[in-house]
Image 1 (cartoon, rainbow, N blue to C red):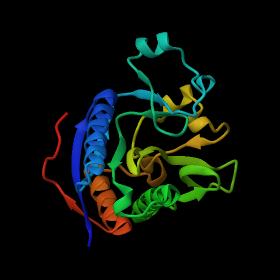
Image 2 (cartoon, rainbow, N blue to C red):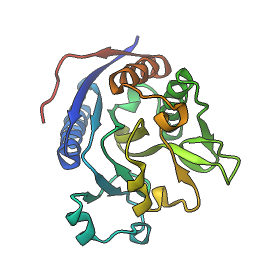
Image 3 (tube, one colour):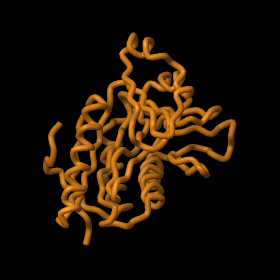
Length: 233
C-alpha cells in the first residue's frame, strides 16, 4: 500500500518560519507515534531569501563573511540542527523538506539519503544533466571523479528523530552562485558549485522543475502525493 504524502509549495518564505513549520510537523508526528496512532508524511518545497545555514557538524571557519557584512547585505544566518556543514539558500533554488515517518518505509537513514539523491539524479537526467554521487560526500555532483571539474549541484542535510525526518535538500536551479563565494560550501574546499541553468544553458521554469521533482519522489519512494493543505505557517 502506497504511503500518502501531503505536499505544500510554500513559495518564498524566511528560513526561520520554514524551520518552525518543520518542527511543528515533526512534533505532531512524534506525538502520534508515542500515542500509538497512525502518522502522516509531509513534503514542503520552498525558496528562501538569502541565508547561510550551518549544520551540527559545521565549522565557523568555513564562513568567510562576518555577521556585520551579512547584515549589511541582508543575508540571514542560522545555526541549524540538521547534519552537514555550511550552505547557502536563496532565490532560484528549490529547497525540499520531507517530514517522513521512515518506520512506514524502512529504518535505514543511509538508504533514505541515497533515495533523496536518486530523486535529484533522475530529475537532472530529464534535463540532460548527469548527476552523480561522490564517495563519502552526501549530495549530488557533476563529474565528482575529476577534482578539477567536480561541482556540486544539490546539497543535503537532514535530521532524524525516532525515524521521523526533517530538513532535506537544496537544488540549484538558477540561484546567484556568487553567494557561495562567501563560504566553503559543505566544508569542502577546492570544489565548485553549479546550477541546472548553468549546465543546460537554458532558462528554466521553477514550476516545471518542481513538477519533475515531485514525479520522481513518487516513483523513487513509491508514494502518492496529496495537495490538500495540512499546515499553515
